[in-house]
Amino acid sequence: MRQDPILSRVKLISEPWDVGPGGYQLGHHPPGFAEWNDRFRDSIRRFWRGDTQQRAEFAARLAGSSDLFDRHARRPWASVNFAASHDGFTLADVVSYEQKHNEANGEDSRDGHNDNYSANWGAEGPSDDPKINETRGRVQRGLLATVLFSHGTPMLLAGDEFGRTQRGNNNAYCQDNEISWLDWAQAQSPHGEALTTYVARLLRIRHENPVLRCRHFLHGKEEPAPGILDIAWFDTHGGIISPDSWNDPQKRLFAVRRAARNNDGSVAILTLFLNPSENDRVFRLPTQNVATRLLIDSLAPDKEESDITTDEITVAARSAVLTKSVIEAPS
Image (cartoon, rainbow, N blue to C red):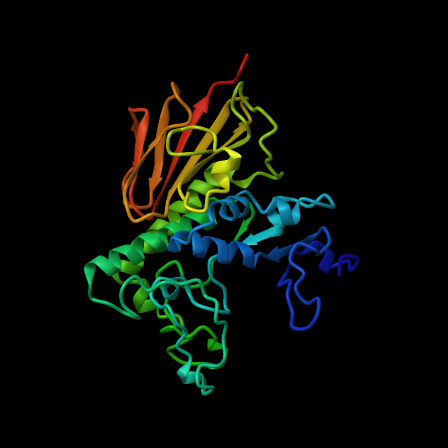
């Protein structure tokens, strides 16, 4: 394929697993291929579900999965990052069902993947409970922000931008009906339009900030500005996360700061604050004495960008916040 005069010039994306011995080959395809990263999918689902012992694994996926792909001159785009695909739950079903519901497939629900790392947040399937739906919306938006703000190639399942459901069916390939179709009326509902607008905003932010699309892996060894590493990880107090803290199974919150030079020589600094817990938490900004702007808060996705005038920021429960600072070109 890589030698073919036509195929070698198109985007080559592999689904790097198959049945049988040695069938799972994530990270082992040659340069030139991008690979679906199921470890990214499973990690971000477990992180936002609130599982313990996920912070270090989640951080590795957020940073482009260099442990899997940083070899043989491969680049971060080799990792195809996603929360849902054509197999398994849709994004809406990830936050609405704890069990697969494949009865319509005619195999007594024996088919389909069993490890979905999902949660229904209080009721199985559709709910009229405002509290349950609020939590589901927060987790959905957190998952979407993670996909769009991680290093690598983001992949979005059609319909996830407006909350498409397959009614808990995680193996709907055999269904050519309302279970598997895209419901465009849902896309035009108030909830569907609000979620679509949010996804569009995430895409715009990614497009406008090259540091979110770095062409090389970041390892915290370069200093785009004095004292500012290309990537660094912080706790809620604004301190660098220690090795012992990384290994603490109960620690879940953190912030990741990424920095890169702009074409004019200035340095863009973007910090993503992540709170998968059930309580609001205060973070101290890791970059002090620099004008900082809030780009998006997943709790209030329609809130306009604004300047941050204190040295702390509140991140709501099960939410993500992205901020930006710009340091003028160092002399």
